[in-house]
Amino acid sequence: MTTIQARFQLDYGDFKLDVDLKLPGTGITVLFGHSGSGKTTLLRCIAGLQRAPQGFLEINGHTWQDSERDLFLPTYKRPLGYVFQEANLFPHLTVRDNLHYGLKRIKHNSGTVKLEQTLELLGIGHLLERMPGHLSGGERQRVAIARALALNPEVLLMDEPLASLDFKRKQEILPFLSRLHQQLDIPVLYVTHSQQEVAQLADTLVIMEDGRALASGPLSETQSRLDVPLAQEREAATVWRATVAEHEADYHLTRVAFAGGSLSLPAVDAEIGTPLRVQIYARDVSIALEAPTATSILNVLPATITGIADGRDGQSVIRLQVGDQALLAHITRKSALLLGLQIGMAVYAQIKGTSLLN
Amino acid sequence: MLNAADMATLWLTFKVAAIATVLMLLIGTPLAWWLARTTSRWKSICNALVSLPLVLPPTVLGFYLLVLMGPAGAIGKFTAWLGLGTLPFTFPGLVVASVLYSLPFVVQPLQASFTSIGEQPLEAAATLRAGPLDTFFSVIVPLAKPGFLTASILGFTHTVGEFGVVLMVGGNIPDKTRVVSVQIYNHVEALEYTEAHWLAGCLLLFSFSVLMVLYTVLKTQPVAHPLK
Image 1 (cartoon, chains in turn purple, brown):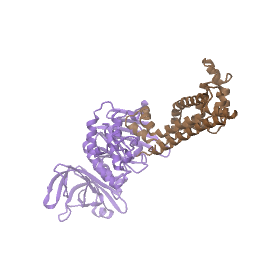
Image 2 (cartoon, helix red, strand yellow):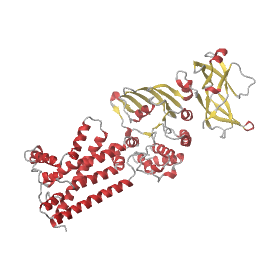
Image 3 (cartoon, rainbow over the protein chains, first blue to last red):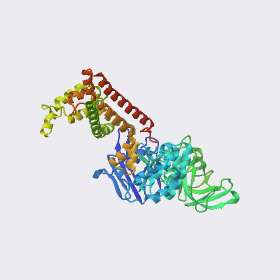
Image 4 (cartoon, each protein chain N blue to C red):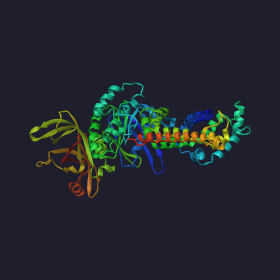
């Protein structure tokens, strides 16, 4: 199932990149980290825009780089799509010609049908005759995404595609990306420093720091790892994927099912079976030793403690397993002591609030 | 009015300038591209060499070319060995000298243009399956259009306006090397001020109109660089 293998080492003196990753061949893999963590460099190495002296890269069984065999496929020979932070459209070409630039250069031209779907999906069909200089930032970025997708690539690489946009434009594009996510059958590598984008888009999460991959794995599993700083942050959260199971119209509630249980959410306007992402902040989760009988909290789930770590400012970070899902809880260190929490204990997780991501 | 001899010098000048401009674009484009992109330590030396004609008196350049291309010079011996004879006082010699003399006027605008285009469009083209040569013609050339326009016009007009190098290397042979600037000198020497006025006026009008056109066109061009 693993279809991307990436191993790179490069040394610029003040910056080193040293990663060895195996990534899944489907869904969105988010490379997350602060600026200078090496996430963009890693993406550029995968694209071949930068050449790591020591490197091995295999995608879908095709080797793109193997420094031991002195093999390095130049970027233009790699069947990839790349979306830059700045849309990087050709200013001398219309939107249509930008979209066709790559399309004209691929051999098997099965792309026209695909392009039309993409135009519709990204809502840019009406912009075709415009010059890039006359588009808004959000429109430019959507064209750039379509231009990359039009190539029918084997992997889509996106370097902070939303970072240069203001909040409003981001909100304009995120839904497109979520929708893409459901319709694309190729792996996407997505670089960002935004936790919101991680929560909304990631299936797999790679946390980068100082040129290394601190952790990598399925989203909620990686989010809840206690050995990486993410779990300690005030905004720490886990994202669960669930499907709409039942509407309780009387109470204005919707029940969603996840692997190993169900949650009640404020009414969701979606059909039964619709996939959803539910984000649960660690600060919204509290722990009880026995099933609370009288509580206003609806979502109380049996859980097992799988990890305990010290958090910031007198807090404890508790990692829980609920069914097949990992969950983080931030509670005070005093409570953790009073309850005598230990790894392996069966407890109840009380979830005060959830937020729906799409 | 312009007499037949004057017309002949005008035609010759145009021929020299046109051929030299084509050659300068052919040589100058790869040279400017290399200078814009390289980090080689030879870059400074090459930049300095290409720019030398900007600061040297034309007679200095002309003198060295005369010596080098003459029967005893290295280039002269080479061209003689090829069976071409020697270049001084011939039309080809005039073209060679013009190319060297006006090259910086072609290389510098191109180099500036290439530099301002930057890395981004090249990377975008590479991710869209365009190889290096393809990228050059489909992205760089159109984006550097103002640079090419400036380079061609400055190269052409500067060649039209040269005098010192022409006199040293080409001499003053009617229909072979006698260009407008030399002819004006001849008229003035012979105190034929009316004829000198006519030719000088032509040159002045030509140069002014061409530059005028250049700057008007450049103003309407979208700036080469900012990638939106």
